[in-house]
Amino acid sequence: MSDPILYLHGQGGNAAEAKRFRPLFPDSEVRGLEYRGTTPWETGAEIREAVERMGAGGKSLTLIANSIGAFYAMCAGIEERIRRAYFISPIVAMEKLIADRLAWAGVTEEELKTRGSIPVPFGEDLSWEYLCYVREHPLRWRVPTEILYGSRDGLTSYETMADFAAEYGAGLAVMENGEHFFHTEEQLRFLDEWLRCAGCVPGARVNVCGSTCCILRLLGRGKGGYSFLAERGGKEVVLKQIHHEPCAFYRFGNKIEAERRDYERLRQAGIRIPAMLALDADRERIVKEYIEGAVVLELVRENRPMEAYLAQVREMAAKAREAGLNIDYFPTNFVARDGLLWYVDYECNEYSDAWSFENWGVRWWSRTSELEAYLRQNE
Image (cartoon, rainbow, N blue to C red; front, side, top):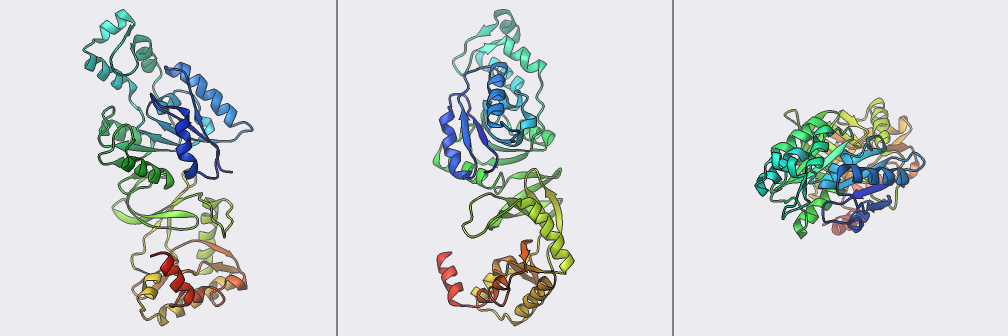
């Protein structure tokens, strides 16, 4: 099982909303917390208790928090127990929001101080005690975090959200015409895809080892992760986000450590691969060189001449075998650029005759019955 997942709802929500996320994290226990408090000090105590209960035995948790639930989480003192967090429309500037609500209600701060509490027709009553708490307890949040924000969020401006993301090194995905409350079919599809890809959706700015990658488009989904074309420092790169979706025919260990290990094994074997530019173990992300060219599967599909590339893949296979390895010879893992063949995945395994190029891989490098069946199934 992967990390347990704790879901914190927003105002007006409930713990039952957590069931939406269970199909997205099939290897994790996903629980919602039905907190009762309406202040950060009350709710913080409830969140700490839930974290201790779910993290019994020293387990780390993943956190999904919506709107004010994210604010309460950041006030709860739980950073050491949270491995990663996903915030949906988080409240990241509560003092400013309270000031805005005072203005909307036509109430001055001095009136609030005098009266202590003022009921308003929208949301919780305004409270002087609450405002003082917010000022005396500025947010501190040092957890690897992804943020989903709607461009039409009426509670937090884009500039405020972007400043928060930059200050805390969080990834920020923006849904155009998304609202503070993600509730329409289109918005919920976007939210699901954002979570499924761990925050990497076209238009997102994601953090990798302190630098920002801007996601351009999805390149493909493999057994172990999603690969995206991204821009980093003015250059196009590939960002691979590890996923933990089940795979019926392959068993995984620690995927991110396997990427690091396999990259070094392939380099030492002399296999032509793109350079690894960054590896973020906390967020399970890799940035590597982008090899622009034709994917070999498309060359095979189009009946292009393959003799030169078959010679190169056999040369790679010989180097891999000499190093005691097999690579994944499926043609989606190879790109042809300027006549040279590149193995653009890092996966490799201990050598086995059954999975060698001649005994398994070669069947996918021409229009065989196996490839025809694959193409029909994936059209």
